[in-house]
Length: 469
Image (tube, rainbow, N blue to C red; front, side):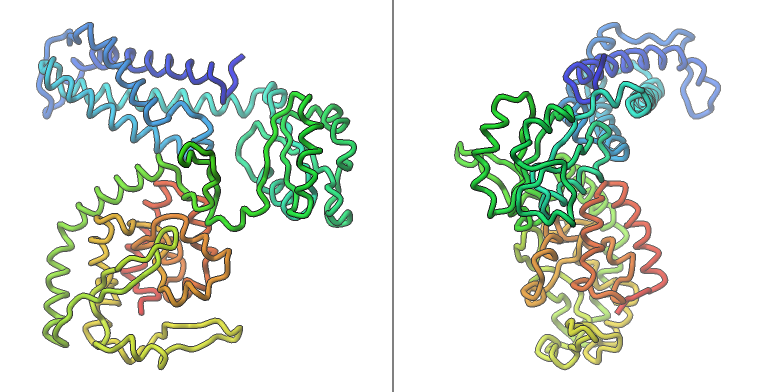
């Protein structure tokens, strides 16, 4: 029986993809003559011929590219949206590679046939993956292959681990319960037993994996637990009590040949970062075409009203707490930063408010530029340079970051953005250092589709001018 995250299922997926590519190539050759009736497609003979070697070359090429982009690593794509995005990108790269092969070899193959082949292959590969997801979620046997997790530690760390397990979308994880570490509040966290009963609990509840989530004060019990688990056929995991020091998550990396924990690991993996960077470069370069005339007009208006400098360069805090120079059109008088203290206020809770609606330092042209967010356009160059992304948490000013609480620093786990979840849900009406929850929501739910949604919503927010000051 195939298990979703098994090697056998990965090999089965490769075989199914290879057969799908070969089938769709044959299908496109059969269907191609039927497209002759369309006025924009060149007529071909009744039997469109595809060289036999392509039935071996194309499936092999597509499977290799899919493998290189980790399509067959099921744990990377627990969410259907992430798998769809990965499949779309992989299909695009495989299609471009296949087109290159045809250009240098079998140029007689119809372009319409090739396009039909690519579209049908994507749809077939998508269809069987959807059916596989439905199968694994609905089959009665799914409960028998669940990984049954027992958390050793019923304190705050253990409860946090348990909450995360329950929230997990992976259908093969089941939280059995907690083992009291002797430090937890029995009233606050019910447990199945104490450390002395660990072996019995594992056998009684058919535990497959044990998660050790002890507080610092109980770390001396680690060796005792390890001795108990040494002779049991269970997986052993350690939840680090200092995980809150991390920006978002921790990774184990090879550091000079030594396995070490990276407390500053990015919230997005290398594959997601590749997609995000390609997305930024493509849309950033594409946006420059209509934007350059607007930038030239904005620069001229600033120059005529208040002279140079046209650009405002400011140090901001970006990914992993690193500072960089962010570009904006200057919308305030020249010595605006020296007058910052005159406009700063505090709310009822004592939180610093550094922006006000009718800031006297803003020029007339500046108000117009801010109204339509034209002052942000130079940040496209930050995006192309790689210091910013199109979508992400807004880069904050260093003196405000110094006042951050530790949990707020998790917003630096990904590259800062020109727009983000915070902007489309309040913009300046909600100072970003007081609403870090919006940025954390984006980080925890990141996908390329969420980026597209935010960009579309940003266009609407800019048009209505909500919170633009």
